[in-house]
Amino acid sequence: GWLGWRRRQQERQDLLATAELEHSVERLREQTRTDPLTGLSNRMHVLGWLEEAWERSRTGKQHLSVLVVDIDRFKSINDRYGHPAGDEVIRQVARAIASSIRQGDLAGRWGGEEFVAVLWSCPQDSVHEVAERMRVAVESLRVCVPDIVETIRPTVSIGAATWCGDLEQLPHRLLAEADRALYAAKRQGRNRVSLRGEDRPAVGGLS
Image (cartoon, rainbow, N blue to C red; front, side):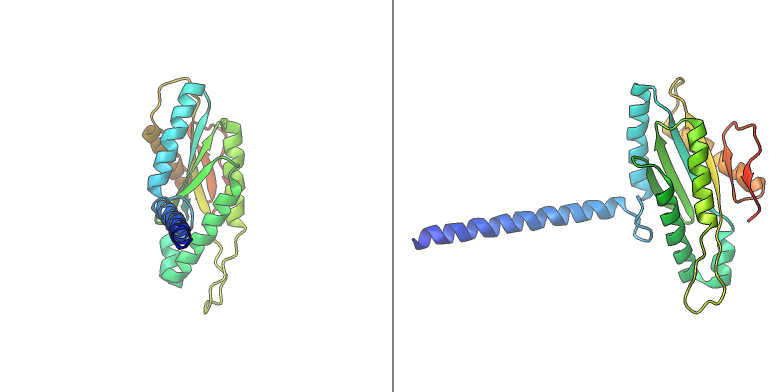
């Protein structure tokens, strides 16, 4: 009867309201872990993911690697072409970085023109391959921006550090070591990969 129909209508409305609430919560959760400019993970989500990956590596005695990636001479890009062009460079570099990592790894925007990638169960030789693939992908970019005749050709410097799971190592120290390797790549001429403790010459050329 009428009461049964009303009850079914109310149940349907309750289900729709619950689904909408769950969708809103998931959307908010996604916003809290995503960088709005690039769509990559934001700094907070990268840190949380790194902590989890470190714990898995520690218990499973697996390699854990971190790449710190910085767009070369980004300030001069902003100064010469303007901030909208700089934003487009960041977006395209982010896509190149994301397309270069393996399935199961994570890339995020660390802040400004700097990015971090976390590679789980990735030995040092493979880290170098991933980082070099990333460097070449960015070097191949040709960024076109409306009202600018020139094509912008960004490059990145990459510092990498790997924890082998055999000695006690904390995630923030691994990040610091990758950061030091990044500055070594900058000193060596930019547009190159530098691995912590690497004896062989860095690859790549001047930006």
